Length: 275
Image 1 (cartoon, rainbow, N blue to C red):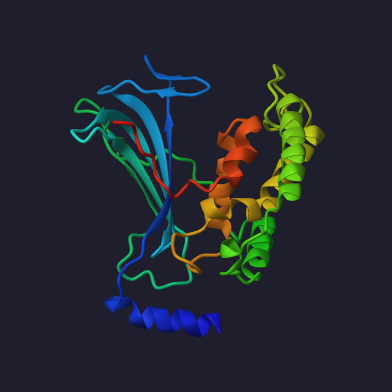
Image 2: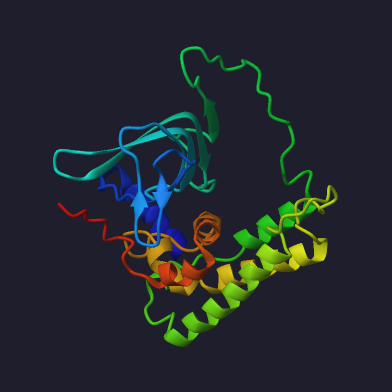
């Protein structure tokens, strides 16, 4: 049934109005005047700040994009805070291998000069090593198993999936497992050269920490549906692309604020600045 609907939608696409939905994150390096308090985020205006931005597009196609460059903040004549981000590096990854790629840019990494004196080497200096189905049986098996699971295009819009009892349980288990990861697992700092491939102080603790945090991330999807889903009902399920957004969400917020942000419903309301 879903296949038939997809073919029907594809046939209507040339004459249909495009519906676009995205998730965007912006990361800033330390800069003079850039401070964070319990209540405010202070941003210096008209100053170049090294910035990294990622863009996940859910509709009308599915892509992952990342940009590296500088950001400049300013307040316009209407009193609105604006950010201008210029990038010298842009990475595009097409997440829809099963749809027609006609007219779409292929997955590509573009690298440009940072300034007039900078020169981009003509030779790609990256190591020619990557996971592929021919060279990694684990990757191939996991990918095939994942693709065999049909996407649910309704669950992200369901209601009453995250009652208070579930929120309390997730908060307790996440704080415990996140703290374990910080103290003894993957994120633990160690002076030892043999740190088991960056798994912190101990390989087994690192493995348990990653599995523990991973389980909370996967079990909490129902509580974060307002963040993960598209702006239009039924246009995306929960796949690798959505998991990328959701896992990143957990990795960037303070542990004690993660659950509060997760269950909030203000994500699509925008931000109104006082005049």
